[in-house]
Structures are given as structure tokens and as C-alpha cells.
Length: 302
Image 1 (tube, rainbow, N blue to C red):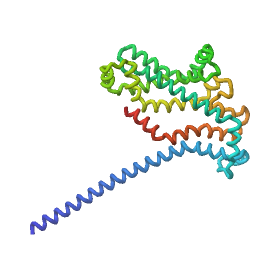
Image 2 (image 1 turned 120 degrees about the vertical axis):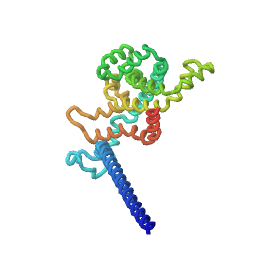
Image 3 (image 1 turned 90 degrees about the vertical axis):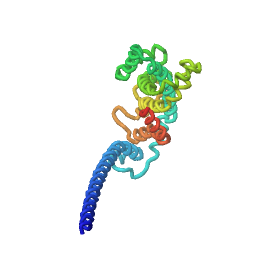
Image 4 (image 1 turned 60 degrees about the horizontal axis):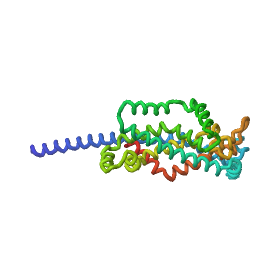
């Protein structure tokens, strides 16, 4: 009889504990579900806010001027591809893209080489002079770009490089060097010194150690730096207008700016031009999205 009572009591206790455990799990699951749903909702709202202007720009590029004037927020009733044909003919789209790509790639190569060479001794040699030089480079990130326009213009003019691709490439290289030094110095500090010591024991010089050991390990952070340099070159309007005077040498953004009139704007030209200017960058990101994300992640982890 006593054993049966003990069994019944133990069964009830187990049942109560199971109910409590189930209740705790359900509460935890509910809290996690609410947090997950809230996070997804917030992120979706942010994505919609970011993509809304892009969607509006693309939709407006296919509409006629009459439709835009009568109902600027409505979807196009008919796709007018002639808007794009006219813009490509008027803005010399292919020439502007070739100019932009050439200037951007040249700037990326120069920034990567010069800033990595400067960052290598800054990351390995520890004394007050290297610290001062590093601070000097970082000051370049603090100075507003517009404050340096006049000295840069006078410098490029004295070198005889106005209205030349070389002059504009030098401007972009100098402007992005502080960012490159910052990226590479932070990245190189995490590279083990044992690799360099092993190369030096084999008779490698300082430059050979940099070129054959250090530089190949900089691919992730170089990809990250290339993204920033590409965006700064591709989206720039002021520097090409200031340092280039020949219209055939202009980059893509000043070419788009030509469709902004002083007193009026033709939306059937402005919206297609903006879409065409953004299209190459979008295609590159779609094709190389995995490499871009992995490069940025590797640079952050390092």
C-alpha cells in the first residue's frame, strides 16, 4: 500500500515537472519567435526604405514626360525604351564608362601598392617616429575634401596635368591613401612575425619579404579597400569637372549631370541616365557578391 502511494506521488511530481518544463520551453520559444519576427520586420522595413528610391528611379525611367507630369507616383502604363536609346546617344555612354573604369582601376592599383608599402614599416617598426607618421596619415581622413581642392588644383596645374587622366588619377590616389594606410596597418599587425623571420633566415630582403610573403596575404583587405576606392571614384562629380575640361574625357557622373538644366529638368533623360550610371556597379556586385562579402568579412576577422 505504501509503495503504491509513493508511486502515485512520484508520478504526480514527474507530471508537474514535465508541465513546468514544457511551459518554460514554450515561453522561451515564444520570446525567441517574437524577437526573430521583430528583427525580420525591422530589417525588411529598412530594406524597403533603401530600395524605394531605386525602384522609383527605375520605374520613372520607362515613363513618358506626360505620364510623369500628370501622375508622378504611378507605375508606367507603357515601357518607353526609347528614353534609354536617346540618353545613350546624347551622353556618349560607352566612352564615359571606359573613362570611369580606366581611372578607377588605375587609382585602385596605385592606392593598394603605395599604401601597403607605407603601412608595412608602420605596422612592424615601433617607435615615436612611426607613430607620428601614422598620425600624419590619419589627419588626411579628418581634413574635409573641399578644403583641399584649391591646393590640389594649383599643384596639378603647376605639374601641367590639368585636363589629363594622370592628373585625376593622382588626385584620387592621394585622397584615398590615408584610408589605405589605415586598413593595411591594422591588418598587418595581426600577421604573425614568424613568417617574416623565416623568410629573413632564408636570406630574403625587406622588400622581397613584403612582396612574396606579406602582399599575397593582403588580398582580403585589398578587396575591401577596392570597394571604397571604387565608390569614391565612380560617384565623384566635383573632381572630374574641376580637373578635366574636355567633354570626351569626363567620367560617368559628370555626364549624367549634364542632363540637369539650369531652369528645367527633363525626367525622361535624367532617370535613364541615373539608371545607366548605376548599372555597371550593380552588375559587378551581383556577379562578385560572394567575393565582396568574404573579403570584407576576412578583413574584419583579421
